[in-house]
Image 1 (cartoon, rainbow, N blue to C red):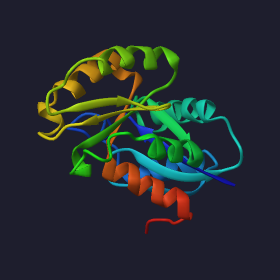
Image 2: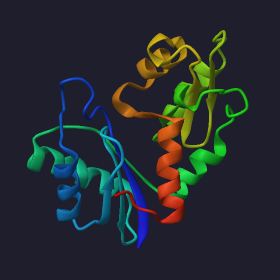
Image 3: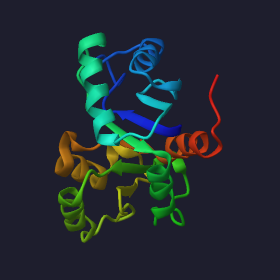
Image 4: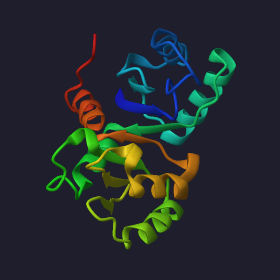
Length: 183
């Protein structure tokens, strides 16, 4: 069995796309995944499964969300090694004094990387934007809502990405690295 992470875009943000985490975990179990645990209340799920293609899992989860819970959401699935790469690639750790204001935007391929490369060439003042192999990293010392870099990145990538702050990424990474589970 391998450990995977599913990141659901836009779940439980504001009034739209509300899902009870117990219902979400039950849905994952019904799809055949084991050791299913939700992390926080914002669409982060850690689970175990036999070897599978992450893209296939994302499609299956997206379909089940609509059919079983009545919610449409883009789903990103990573295996524990892909998440470890995202953690290891972050070039902004030295300057990011507050991990709650350091964001990771998942990238799905070379086309997105090319879009982000253009943005990385810009000057962002006190903010920083950097590119890794599977993610873009944004340091927002004044918060994400006031971040020109995060706003530009969000507009450039649209719904083809999802973001998490560094605290959440590290919590997910810890659960994957140690095989630990939340209660």
